Length: 68
Image 1 (cartoon, rainbow, N blue to C red):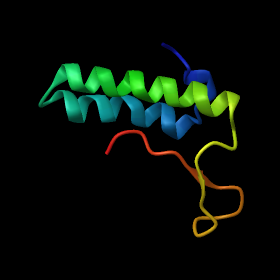
Image 2: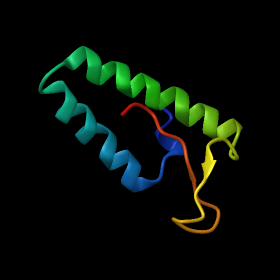
Image 3: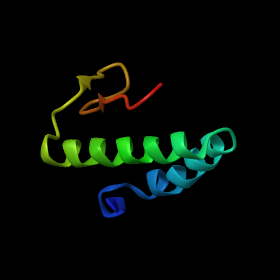
Image 4: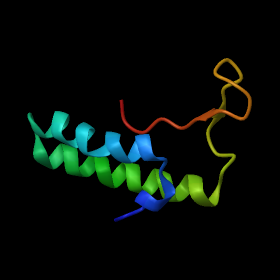
């Protein structure tokens, strides 16, 4: 589960911080969310037009929520 090469540097920095934040309450849930992130990254890498177009955020920006 290492798709970090597909992530921008800021996203690579955010992943462990997200895990730590959630793991403070539930390590299993934090790890499960990282697995969901991994699947989403692979989906987006093979389907770059997946998700909803977000012209309100900028040209060529799409959103693809993972979790809440």
